[in-house]
Length: 224
Length: 230
Image (cartoon, rainbow over all chains, first blue to last red; front, side):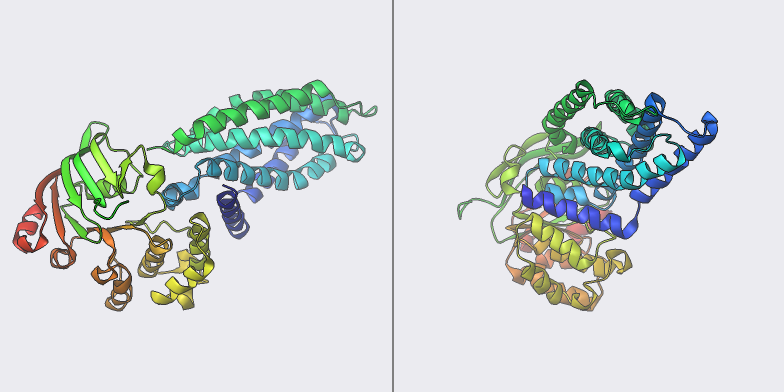
């Protein structure tokens, strides 16, 4: 399976590097949203729960953009047929697409989080960067798994653009709650608090549950 | 697969898309090393038959055995032993011809040398590093033929394989997918004379039903086949 996952990931990253269809759009969306929040909230800066909420809502909406594109080449250019006829475990496609979405999210966050800090955030996030990275990593894994599942479901329909956000956003509510609650103490103007372990545990549990669910149902999504 | 086991054995095969019956009551046997030519007008069920044999569609009725394995239950055992040249080239447009083939070679655990060998054989070595979207349909078809042959399949499924190919390109791919290649083939063709010349067994479909089944293609006249299109 490792061979197939590696081939699929390399293929998708190569296509993204060449076409720039997903990551630039996600990044532009994130920065535009921060600017919109800046004006809509009519505040110079935000901190605490509000800052965490703005950050996570923006990142999750940006992730939805990539979910809709994740399987487009497989559907429109025959990638599904080529993959399904190869002697490889079908789970390889789930793992590879989740890994690719994870890469996209990390790439976007590398630019979007500093942009957020510059445009909106009151307290400096640099002192709490390791803790923030831990929350981002746990949330990203869950978003990548759910996004892959939803992307695979959506691509089977004619209304992909509608189905993907309609399915993905409710499924990501637990991530939004847990990630925002875990991030909020890190972004307090008066001084960062500790990382709330309870919410990290919720994120880890979410990753595990949806990982197992995706593993169980993904094969059926590829059937005719 | 043992030597005397047929490459393809269909009994009362049926397949529907919702209410619409695409295939019904197809029964035939294809021995190893032989070629089945499938004829029929557009929408007759030819491509559906090919996709069932390729394990990409589940049969809804009857039984299907490919390379000695019953489908869909044992489809996993024949994936990797079937090559498909379909209507679409199954190539990523933003990857080069060579990148596409290397990707499929990795999926099939085939060495990179085979990619160069095949690209050279179909006269695409010079264009190997161009993205597929920059290639003409005929060139993309040649690369698609390479993709289907990468893993030296035991069964080759060909849906109008010479479509878009000029005579030179058709000549270049003939030794790879033509009769002389000695492969077990299922061939869909609208070129009746060429199709019959390539065939050992003939299947004619009309509205998903087999209206012409001949174990000996020599006994079938071009006129019989042309009536399918009337």
